[in-house]
Length: 427
Ligand SMILES: Nc1nc2c(ncn2[C@@H]2O[C@H](COP(=O)(O)OP(=O)(O)OP(=O)(O)O)[C@@H](O)[C@H]2O)c(=O)[nH]1
Image (cartoon, rainbow, N blue to C red):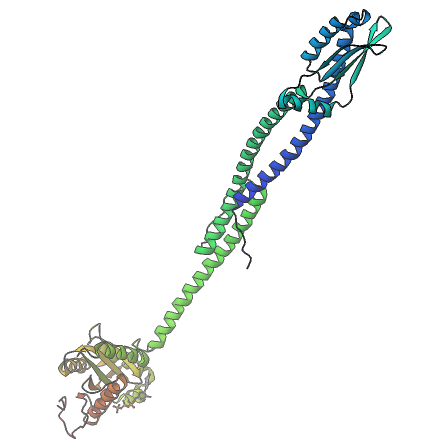
């Protein structure tokens, strides 16, 4: 598997600038160095010609009188001063009057000579004249010493300039890289933050590199769009949640009385049984059914029947604690959940209270009705093990109450005896 060697943008830019700077310096430096060498060699050649002519003028008299000693002195003086490799003064017919040879001791001397031979392979000659008459010749051979010194000086200056240039270029490159990285960083941090935290209210600040600035503006426009969509989405979501809550509440409520419906009641009952199961606690259920409710409907109409149901619901509600629950199971049937009773007496107390609450008649316009209910009482865990069984038991007890004269309560009796007294327990 190939692994990618990753680097930061700053490092990559720096590397790129450094590479291009080194390449530019190497190319330019090499070209300049070559040019310097060529120019230097040309100038040294001109200088050699001048030296040859100087020897020719100075040695004119010595050649004219064939004075070897003077000729040698002149040649030695100039040749040493000018650091020549070889030089000679001869008469026109070729008789050598003076000659010089660079001592060239040691490694350096040999090196000077070698460079001289390389640079000036051909000797430079000058005629010795007396007036217009050609009387002799001067021949000089250039040495490498001066060339080496000048070259070393040029190299020193060149290297110094290159170091300065490199330093300045790398500082500039660093600044440029930082500037570019900082701008990309601003773009990256805004987009990264938006992605990670889903915070589309972030904005990229204005950037001074046109292309990055444009990119930042595009990102900002995108963020603004996403932000608006997010806000809309959140609003829709919360209204959906509210609608959902309302729907689920409606699903658990009775539309006429606003009480819990059968489903709401069963859920609460199951939860209550779950809470007390195993802890020794008791839960009581009252099952209420309006007495002769059909007559009310038949006699006064359905609307009056409804009003009576709402009124009965209110009366029951007023008889229980906030922690208890009253529900309308359907038709004229109600239930009450007493979720922390000590024994059946507590439930009987509530049943009595409800029966008493039914006593005042209900006046609806001209109609006067006397509400009445029969109540069945069942207790968990005495009478049932499950919510369903508990409801059936309470319903059964209510049915017994109906059979025995209505308008009173009965406690569930698994084996009911025929004529129990009104309001008495079967235990
Ligand atoms: N007004 C009204 N009546 C309803 C509603 N739901 C059911 N009913 C009626 O309620 C009556 C219930 O009567 P039952 O409980 O069977 O009999 P009852 O007349 O109460 O007699 P007992 O229960 O034996 O005392 C029926 O006539 C149903 O049509 C409702 O929402 N509104």
